[in-house]
Image 1 (tube, rainbow, N blue to C red):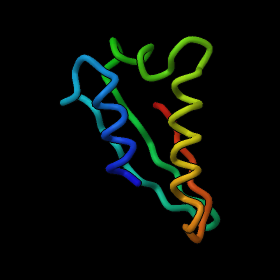
Image 2 (image 1 turned 90 degrees about the vertical axis):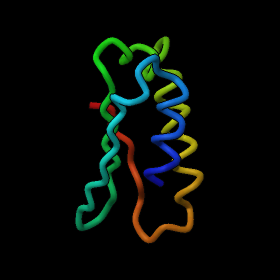
Image 3 (image 1 turned 180 degrees about the vertical axis):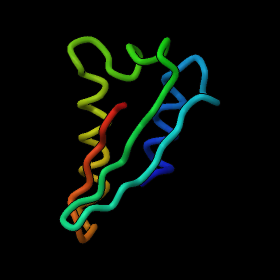
Image 4 (image 1 turned 45 degrees about the horizontal axis):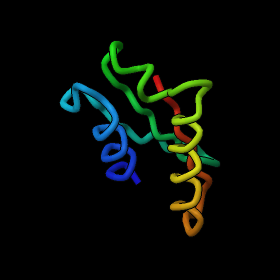
Length: 75
């Protein structure tokens, strides 16, 4: 799942080396934290959050077989 989010984010931004993806596992869920360069934040979020929503939708679809729900946070 981390590789999927990292691949999508690196394709969107101007500084792909600044993309940092981490996984935080809680008792009832898994949170994927996505950090990008501040200049690229708008490209990852998109107009009215459409790209961020699309990333979350793809991750949700890919995590259907996971034991816990997976959430994406853009930090």
